[in-house]
Image 1 (cartoon, helix red, strand yellow):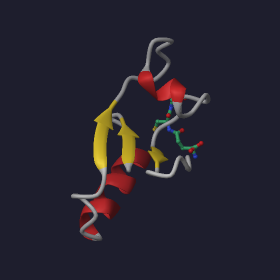
Image 2 (cartoon, protein in one colour):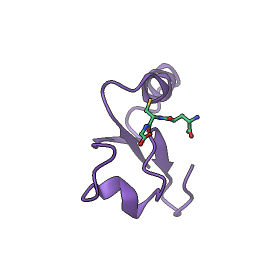
Image 3 (cartoon, rainbow, N blue to C red):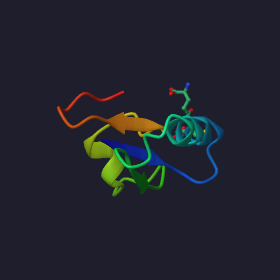
Length: 62
Ligand SMILES: N[C@@H](CCC(=O)N[C@@H](CS)C(=O)NCC(=O)O)C(=O)O
């Protein structure tokens, strides 16, 4: 799984802390992105460009 985040996002921080507290750290690749950036890789996964965005291995986007 991949979790897209920005360091300053409180919403993304909640997701990151939760992932670590649930010992999911080794199953989730944390990918730092920029928001409001037309070249951001995030837009391929989430056209709204919001973080956090979780992409599961089977292609589900949350
Ligand atoms: N409830 C929101 C929370 C996510 C959110 O608003 N994140 C902010 C960062 S804290 C964001 O991605 N902002 C980028 C933007 O508005 O373009 C959602 O998931 O839709």
